[in-house]
Length: 265
Ligand SMILES: [Zn+2]
Image: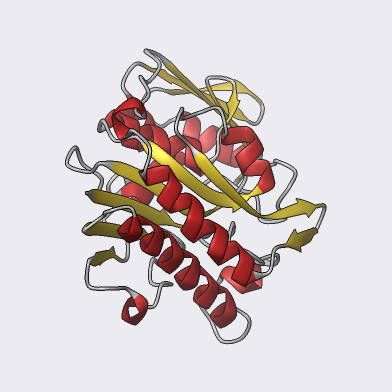
């Protein structure tokens, strides 16, 4: 069984301030270690369920957060950024049996995580076909575009509330919840144990029933904090300015939508 895992840091067990997510001396080291351990827990669950080939995309910031020395032999790690619109799921293709997401966070402007955002922090609200457009929505649909079912998500409670209905076999672990600038976090040990257990349970399902059919049409709406960004990105091919701060992009081509996300979010 061949499994794809994409990992982020703002939805791991205790990250609360941006300082904890940025590659530098200090509190970041603790968060990067937790990200590594949560990914290792998901890898452990996958191996227990029969995975023998696992590709992990380190999909936060510079893409060099996970300690490669902590990954078992069956793991290949994707580090850094290719520049492809597949972005946080770069490396996904039709050969994978399932995709799993670890450490993911709520969409731009959503309650439930002080670090909520969608790609950058330029926007206050992003929707896709009327749904809160989290990075998880964008890239789990990218996996569906490649025919790969998404079966596991670990992250904050708000993201899980927004995402539970997106994929029929989705098993979830909420490692923290947020209120305003605060978070309430599981013990990392408990978070890792639950991730290990639920990722195994996710992959023991009938994966042939897991892949969704993408909608035939996509409507992306991006509301920027700064009006000058709305004007700038309204010039991206296919985009248009809908309101003072909001840019729209409509398409039937999901790869075209991912391209807009890569350049305009
Ligand atoms: Zn991130």
